[in-house]
Image 1: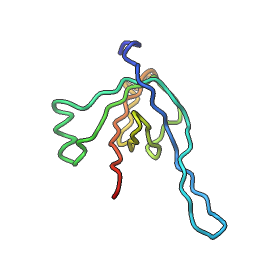
Image 2: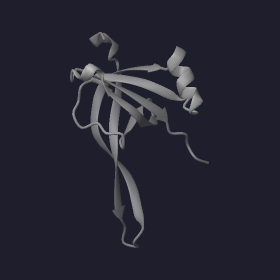
Image 3: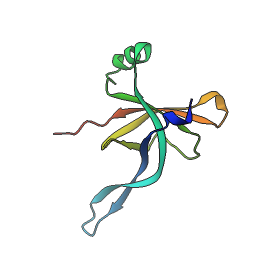
Amino acid sequence: MEIGELRHRITFQKKNVTVNENGFEIETWEDVKTVWAAASHLHGREFYEAAQVQAEHTVKFTIRYVKGIEPSMVILFNEKRYNIIAIDNIKYKNKWIEIRGQEVMPSG
């Protein structure tokens, strides 16, 4: 991985649930960390494997190693939100992390 490929800004967010004065739960998203990333659509074998599970809106993000990234978080990228479906600490070297994110489709 070349450092110059990390040209996209992504933000990791975690969900916070609070209870309002009427007793209803309110979900909000809190920014955890913003980092530089390489982003690419899946292609070849990766694409066909993802398509088998209806994940055709899947993006692969590669970032420098950061502690604390969890599957319960989401990624904001190009004004879209992506659920984290896989996290790979490449070769367990704590140098690079590859994350697969599936776009959250708006409900309606």
